Image (cartoon, rainbow, N blue to C red; front, side, top):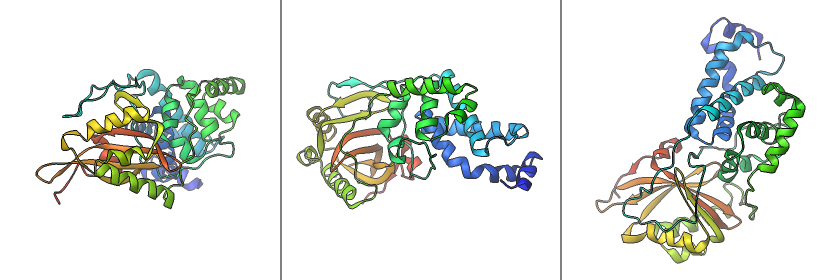
Length: 326
């Protein structure tokens, strides 16, 4: 961190401040997302963090790195948000023309949103998770049910690899308290399914599964879709709480979705490091209207989960709200 740049920032030079924090902006946004589970909430928390850092720069004494100091601010802003904010409520079923089957269960993390993540965030030497695992929808969902302080400790220690004394300083706590919170968080962490590992991102194996899924989905071929699903495949659709577990009920759900001649075009992207698609409903006029984002969780050469998000998230992934007629 050049001393001249810091001096200019302390003197009120906004450009110098932005240059100081720019290397950390993306990873701080990802950190806020892990803690909050919402892309929009993470962006709000990031802006609060940067404002607090700008206002508090005079108090930065350099005893820790700039990165650690920023993580301290971001973590505490997110904890305050989790304690004070009323999370977005669940929505009723709102897919026109589709009758939903009776759900297997009702999800509690209805505020979950997808994140345009491309594996570009550094981890520390003590990190226990790989990048892709620590941003997967299953992992982020599991984090959300932890108490706020345990969540923060687990992310800082096991995901980012900060050392116990660093986390204790960030949370104005003690090493013993951090160690205790980490132990409770690990014990309370909802088990993420240990299916066969997904194929590497962008690999021929992943491309093959994705191509089969696109063919089956765009042609409304239920039999072809069945062949791609694990026995315990899982569908969720936040902010609607309805969840479907098991191949039979998932296929009933998909059959209802494709009923009455509904057909879709899929536009490929990635969300949370996973294959994802903008889903566009074909209309009689030839136009194709965005209905949502579908994110796949792969287990080997099969699909173990599908998560559907609302169409409002499409622009976050550079996807249009509709496609022209063809």
